[in-house]
Image (cartoon, rainbow, N blue to C red; front, top):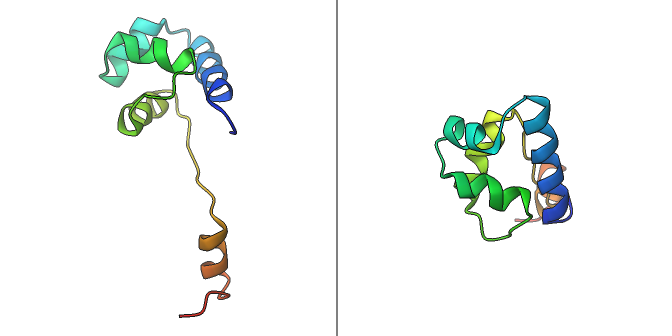
Length: 79
């Protein structure tokens, strides 16, 4: 996922596939209704913890990658 618009599209697609309104999703996630509106508009100021609540309801898993972590796991990092 390289930009907020892609995340917005993904959330919207999953919400619609689950046949949820934005308000229903907000209620299930325990967040304010404007949070879902903001996520689906690609707003970048949504708090990570709040975003994670919405993603959890939609069964969307977020993964982070890091070249530093990859090097350490491969034993290439020197102490």
